[in-house]
Image 1 (cartoon, rainbow, N blue to C red):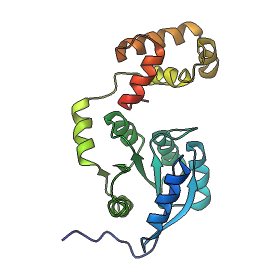
Image 2: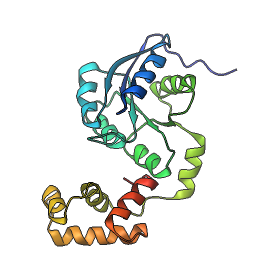
Image 3: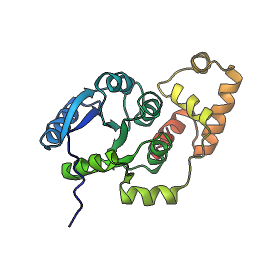
Length: 210
């Protein structure tokens, strides 16, 4: 018989998902749980911290890929500014690199979106009481995949150039010399086994390294 993880009072939940229909559906389904209350909904990563500071949720459900700031990056900000808020990352595709980034950012759980709502609700309850909950298949894949080959600065340069920004644009944004940006891009292309920076960005995203 499964353990009952339900607390005595309602769990306050912040939901961050860029697709309004998905966000609304999740909010409705979670709202049907007698011990869960969705107190805030946002559509971008850079709105997460402000919403958390305003509404003081117990648990934040963050999509791994959010405009403005990724789920793992938002989790890292929450760890600094709202340390009492537990973070659960949701993803459509279970990429091992995303799991590693999420755990490094302080997330307490990582779950695929197609999990039944009952499983999601139980996971919310479990992370609230201090457990770390990770999809078993994804955890096994992450262990076998190994760490990202990219350095932190190479990831920064790839992210900054993802939307077609020039080397000069990236250099200005990151406050680096253009020669340094080129060096990092070249290294990233080599580490990802691709032919150019556009392919490097796609491969890094596919692997969950960005």
